[in-house]
Image (cartoon, rainbow over the protein chains, first blue to last red):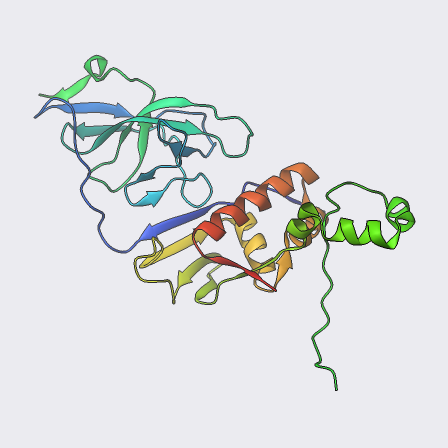
Length: 128
Length: 138
Protein backbone atom coordinates (compact mmCIF):
# COMPACT_ATOMS: atom_id res chain seq x y z
CA UNK A 1 0.00 0.00 0.00
CA UNK A 2 1.32 3.41 -0.96
CA UNK A 3 2.00 6.04 1.67
CA UNK A 4 0.16 9.36 1.88
CA UNK A 5 2.08 12.36 0.57
CA UNK A 6 2.20 15.56 2.56
CA UNK A 7 3.88 18.81 1.61
CA UNK A 8 7.57 18.56 2.50
CA UNK A 9 8.42 20.83 5.44
CA UNK A 10 11.58 21.46 7.39
CA UNK A 11 11.33 23.38 10.66
CA UNK A 12 14.52 25.31 11.35
CA UNK A 13 15.34 26.01 14.99
CA UNK A 14 18.11 28.40 15.92
CA UNK A 15 20.36 27.74 18.90
CA UNK A 16 21.00 31.39 19.64
CA UNK A 17 18.43 33.89 20.87
CA UNK A 18 17.05 36.03 18.09
CA UNK A 19 17.28 39.77 17.90
CA UNK A 20 14.55 41.91 19.33
CA UNK A 21 11.96 43.06 16.82
CA UNK A 22 10.72 46.65 16.80
CA UNK A 23 7.41 47.20 18.46
CA UNK A 24 4.31 49.19 17.70
CA UNK A 25 1.02 49.63 19.55
CA UNK A 26 -0.03 51.42 22.69
CA UNK A 27 2.62 51.33 25.40
CA UNK A 28 1.85 49.35 28.57
CA UNK A 29 -1.12 47.51 27.12
CA UNK A 30 -1.49 43.73 27.11
CA UNK A 31 -3.53 42.54 24.16
CA UNK A 32 -5.49 39.32 23.85
CA UNK A 33 -3.95 38.05 20.65
CA UNK A 34 -5.53 35.04 19.00
CA UNK A 35 -3.29 33.24 16.52
CA UNK A 36 -5.97 32.22 14.03
CA UNK A 37 -5.11 33.61 10.57
CA UNK A 38 -5.48 31.06 7.79
CA UNK A 39 -7.00 27.62 7.76
CA UNK A 40 -6.25 25.03 10.43
CA UNK A 41 -3.76 22.31 9.47
CA UNK A 42 -2.41 24.43 6.60
CA UNK A 43 1.12 25.75 6.49
CA UNK A 44 1.75 29.19 5.04
CA UNK A 45 4.58 31.31 3.76
CA UNK A 46 4.79 34.87 5.10
CA UNK A 47 5.38 37.52 2.46
CA UNK A 48 5.92 41.25 2.47
CA UNK A 49 3.88 43.84 0.59
CA UNK A 50 5.87 43.15 -2.59
CA UNK A 51 5.18 39.41 -2.49
CA UNK A 52 8.70 38.54 -1.37
CA UNK A 53 9.23 35.88 1.29
CA UNK A 54 9.85 37.62 4.61
CA UNK A 55 12.39 36.87 7.30
CA UNK A 56 10.55 36.97 10.62
CA UNK A 57 12.10 36.15 13.99
CA UNK A 58 15.24 34.95 12.25
CA UNK A 59 13.35 32.55 9.99
CA UNK A 60 13.03 32.76 6.22
CA UNK A 61 9.28 32.10 6.07
CA UNK A 62 9.04 30.40 2.69
CA UNK A 63 6.34 27.96 3.77
CA UNK A 64 8.60 24.96 3.18
CA UNK A 65 11.60 25.26 5.46
CA UNK A 66 9.91 27.66 7.84
CA UNK A 67 6.21 28.18 7.93
CA UNK A 68 3.33 29.64 9.86
CA UNK A 69 0.25 27.69 10.85
CA UNK A 70 -2.59 28.92 13.05
CA UNK A 71 -2.01 27.49 16.53
CA UNK A 72 -5.49 28.73 17.49
CA UNK A 73 -4.29 29.68 20.96
CA UNK A 74 -5.05 33.00 22.68
CA UNK A 75 -1.90 34.77 23.84
CA UNK A 76 -1.43 37.68 26.18
CA UNK A 77 0.83 39.94 24.17
CA UNK A 78 2.41 43.02 25.66
CA UNK A 79 2.31 46.01 23.34
CA UNK A 80 6.10 46.17 23.16
CA UNK A 81 6.61 42.45 22.56
CA UNK A 82 7.07 42.74 18.81
CA UNK A 83 4.18 43.36 16.41
CA UNK A 84 4.71 43.59 12.67
CA UNK A 85 2.36 44.93 10.04
CA UNK A 86 2.38 44.97 6.25
CA UNK A 87 2.71 41.23 5.71
CA UNK A 88 0.45 38.56 4.26
CA UNK A 89 0.14 34.77 4.18
CA UNK A 90 0.38 32.57 1.09
CA UNK A 91 -0.17 28.82 0.74
CA UNK A 92 2.94 27.63 -1.18
CA UNK A 93 1.19 24.49 -2.44
CA UNK A 94 -1.02 26.58 -4.74
CA UNK A 95 -0.03 28.61 -7.79
CA UNK A 96 -1.80 31.83 -6.76
CA UNK A 97 -0.90 34.13 -3.89
CA UNK A 98 -3.77 33.95 -1.37
CA UNK A 99 -2.68 37.36 -0.02
CA UNK A 100 -4.20 36.96 3.48
CA UNK A 101 -3.27 40.24 5.16
CA UNK A 102 -2.14 39.84 8.78
CA UNK A 103 -0.61 41.48 11.80
CA UNK A 104 2.20 39.36 13.19
CA UNK A 105 3.08 38.97 16.86
CA UNK A 106 6.67 37.80 17.24
CA UNK A 107 6.76 37.40 21.05
CA UNK A 108 10.01 39.37 21.35
CA UNK A 109 11.35 38.08 18.05
CA UNK A 110 11.11 34.42 18.96
CA UNK A 111 8.01 33.18 17.13
CA UNK A 112 5.45 33.91 14.41
CA UNK A 113 1.76 34.28 15.34
CA UNK A 114 -0.73 35.91 12.98
CA UNK A 115 -4.16 37.47 13.12
CA UNK A 116 -6.34 38.84 10.33
CA UNK A 117 -7.82 41.45 12.69
CA UNK A 118 -5.89 44.38 11.28
CA UNK A 119 -7.26 47.14 13.53
CA UNK A 120 -5.36 46.93 16.82
CA UNK A 121 -7.78 49.41 18.38
CA UNK A 122 -10.49 46.76 18.14
CA UNK A 123 -8.47 44.14 19.99
CA UNK A 124 -9.55 43.29 23.51
CA UNK A 125 -7.03 43.88 26.23
CA UNK A 126 -6.11 41.84 29.28
CA UNK A 127 -4.47 44.72 31.10
CA UNK A 128 -3.70 48.38 30.42
CA UNK B 1 43.22 3.94 -21.63
CA UNK B 2 39.89 5.55 -20.91
CA UNK B 3 38.86 6.84 -17.49
CA UNK B 4 36.29 4.66 -15.78
CA UNK B 5 33.17 6.41 -14.60
CA UNK B 6 30.68 4.82 -12.28
CA UNK B 7 27.57 4.05 -14.35
CA UNK B 8 24.58 6.24 -13.54
CA UNK B 9 21.04 6.10 -14.86
CA UNK B 10 18.66 9.00 -14.45
CA UNK B 11 15.15 9.91 -15.38
CA UNK B 12 14.89 13.12 -17.39
CA UNK B 13 11.54 14.68 -18.02
CA UNK B 14 10.73 15.19 -21.65
CA UNK B 15 10.10 18.96 -21.69
CA UNK B 16 8.37 19.04 -25.08
CA UNK B 17 6.27 15.97 -24.33
CA UNK B 18 7.31 14.22 -27.51
CA UNK B 19 6.46 10.53 -27.49
CA UNK B 20 9.18 7.89 -27.80
CA UNK B 21 8.05 7.23 -31.36
CA UNK B 22 8.28 10.91 -32.24
CA UNK B 23 11.75 11.17 -30.72
CA UNK B 24 12.87 8.08 -32.64
CA UNK B 25 11.75 9.67 -35.91
CA UNK B 26 13.80 12.83 -35.42
CA UNK B 27 16.81 13.24 -37.66
CA UNK B 28 20.26 13.41 -36.06
CA UNK B 29 20.26 17.18 -36.41
CA UNK B 30 16.79 17.53 -34.95
CA UNK B 31 17.62 15.21 -32.06
CA UNK B 32 20.86 17.07 -31.39
CA UNK B 33 18.95 20.37 -31.37
CA UNK B 34 16.38 18.89 -29.01
CA UNK B 35 19.03 17.55 -26.61
CA UNK B 36 20.71 20.96 -26.53
CA UNK B 37 17.50 22.90 -26.00
CA UNK B 38 17.21 24.98 -22.82
CA UNK B 39 14.27 22.91 -21.61
CA UNK B 40 16.10 19.60 -21.92
CA UNK B 41 19.30 20.97 -20.40
CA UNK B 42 17.29 22.28 -17.45
CA UNK B 43 15.62 18.93 -16.89
CA UNK B 44 18.97 17.16 -17.19
CA UNK B 45 20.47 18.98 -14.20
CA UNK B 46 21.51 16.81 -11.28
CA UNK B 47 21.58 17.96 -7.70
CA UNK B 48 23.11 16.63 -4.51
CA UNK B 49 22.94 17.56 -0.83
CA UNK B 50 25.88 19.83 -0.07
CA UNK B 51 28.55 18.12 2.04
CA UNK B 52 28.28 19.36 5.63
CA UNK B 53 24.65 18.49 6.30
CA UNK B 54 23.87 15.28 8.15
CA UNK B 55 20.47 13.62 8.31
CA UNK B 56 20.14 11.50 11.46
CA UNK B 57 17.36 9.35 12.79
CA UNK B 58 16.97 9.52 16.55
CA UNK B 59 14.25 7.49 18.24
CA UNK B 60 12.16 7.45 15.09
CA UNK B 61 12.47 11.19 14.49
CA UNK B 62 14.75 12.76 11.91
CA UNK B 63 16.94 15.80 12.39
CA UNK B 64 19.27 17.56 9.99
CA UNK B 65 22.40 18.98 11.55
CA UNK B 66 24.51 21.48 9.60
CA UNK B 67 28.04 20.54 10.62
CA UNK B 68 29.72 22.61 7.93
CA UNK B 69 27.32 25.44 7.16
CA UNK B 70 29.03 28.59 5.92
CA UNK B 71 29.67 31.31 8.46
CA UNK B 72 26.83 33.87 8.40
CA UNK B 73 24.60 31.30 6.70
CA UNK B 74 21.04 31.52 8.05
CA UNK B 75 21.41 27.83 8.88
CA UNK B 76 24.48 28.27 11.04
CA UNK B 77 23.79 27.08 14.60
CA UNK B 78 20.49 25.45 13.74
CA UNK B 79 18.84 22.09 13.97
CA UNK B 80 16.32 21.25 11.27
CA UNK B 81 13.36 18.94 11.72
CA UNK B 82 12.05 17.56 8.42
CA UNK B 83 8.69 15.86 8.02
CA UNK B 84 8.44 12.45 6.31
CA UNK B 85 8.11 13.86 2.79
CA UNK B 86 11.12 16.12 3.25
CA UNK B 87 13.13 13.14 4.53
CA UNK B 88 12.14 11.18 1.42
CA UNK B 89 13.34 13.96 -0.91
CA UNK B 90 16.46 14.58 1.15
CA UNK B 91 17.51 10.92 1.04
CA UNK B 92 17.17 10.81 -2.75
CA UNK B 93 19.36 13.86 -3.16
CA UNK B 94 22.10 12.35 -1.01
CA UNK B 95 23.24 10.84 -4.31
CA UNK B 96 23.28 12.99 -7.47
CA UNK B 97 19.73 12.92 -8.83
CA UNK B 98 17.61 14.76 -11.35
CA UNK B 99 14.35 16.30 -10.29
CA UNK B 100 12.57 13.63 -12.31
CA UNK B 101 14.44 10.83 -10.48
CA UNK B 102 12.81 11.98 -7.26
CA UNK B 103 9.40 12.56 -8.85
CA UNK B 104 9.36 9.04 -10.34
CA UNK B 105 10.42 7.41 -7.06
CA UNK B 106 7.85 9.46 -5.19
CA UNK B 107 5.09 8.30 -7.53
CA UNK B 108 6.10 4.70 -6.86
CA UNK B 109 6.09 5.06 -3.08
CA UNK B 110 3.35 7.58 -2.43
CA UNK B 111 -0.29 7.95 -3.34
CA UNK B 112 0.08 11.34 -5.03
CA UNK B 113 -0.57 12.94 -8.40
CA UNK B 114 2.37 13.63 -10.68
CA UNK B 115 1.65 17.37 -10.68
CA UNK B 116 1.61 17.62 -6.90
CA UNK B 117 4.75 15.54 -6.51
CA UNK B 118 6.59 17.60 -9.12
CA UNK B 119 5.53 20.90 -7.49
CA UNK B 120 6.66 19.64 -4.08
CA UNK B 121 10.06 18.57 -5.39
CA UNK B 122 10.50 21.79 -7.40
CA UNK B 123 9.71 23.91 -4.32
CA UNK B 124 12.14 21.87 -2.25
CA UNK B 125 14.91 22.20 -4.83
CA UNK B 126 14.38 25.96 -5.26
CA UNK B 127 14.54 26.61 -1.53
CA UNK B 128 17.40 24.20 -0.90
CA UNK B 129 19.46 25.87 -3.65
CA UNK B 130 18.76 29.28 -2.07
CA UNK B 131 20.01 28.00 1.27
CA UNK B 132 22.98 26.31 -0.45
CA UNK B 133 21.91 23.00 1.05
CA UNK B 134 21.66 21.56 -2.43
CA UNK B 135 24.26 21.95 -5.15
CA UNK B 136 24.23 21.27 -8.86
CA UNK B 137 26.65 18.53 -9.89
CA UNK B 138 28.04 17.35 -13.22
